[in-house]
Length: 120
Image 1 (tube, rainbow, N blue to C red):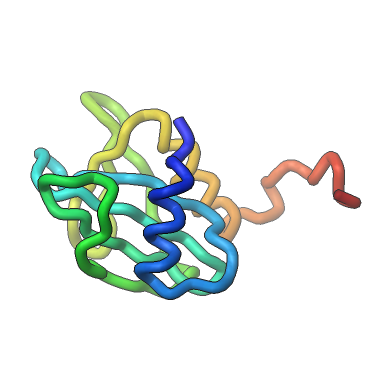
Image 2 (cartoon, rainbow, N blue to C red):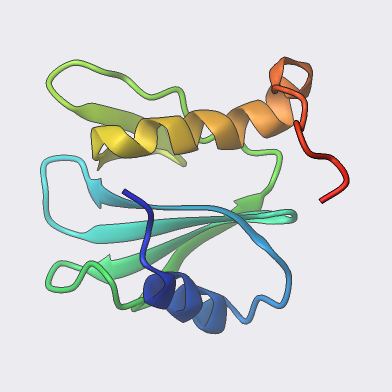
């Protein structure tokens, strides 16, 4: 399920981003509790805390990392989870492809499919 446009715009405003957001996906602290939004731009991977009550309102910047920072790999099993910056996060299965695409764009660019409509 795509992330709603209002959440994307709230994250853009919160971070003061003028450029493009390449990837954006929600996550939770492993075991529940705090919510987070990962925002991937051309320059950074920003992790925004949304707190435990709201999953769609940015509260604080948990961390900001260079774009060359690997997000995954995502472990599958009892749920999709990954470790990032020393913390464990859980995501809905539908966002596994987003994490994989964000990492592939940086670390395995040659394995990405060609753009079928490069002139658009």
